[in-house]
Image (cartoon, helix red, strand yellow):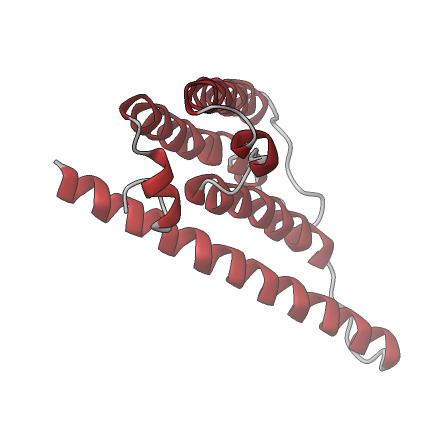
Length: 169
């Protein structure tokens, strides 16, 4: 079972890394094309703003999952090192619990928002659910990592997991 979880963790890391990279490259190319077409008005790029929105939505949430996975969010080291170990452990559990609550809100409310949108883009005529799906999909991943973080924190092993590049090593 651990082998499967580690493989899934590596897959999520791969998708996040290359999803964010691909979205950044796509945004750069679309913006570059926009600048070029304004300078040399031979061809116009219609509907590119819709693709920019799609790329930016996924870039934002995949980037958040990547940071969430590595334990790089919601961490104030100064507070944690200035309190006794038992208090630190309680603070870490509280933080992980609050992170899980935020992830659940993203999952539940994001799904409701996606399911109830019913919008299509004006030019490309694509369903905006593809844009809004970034919220519940990434919220679900954040929930999984929050639960794993809580389990590891209860076991007292989160510090080691944090330094290994992910919750599952």
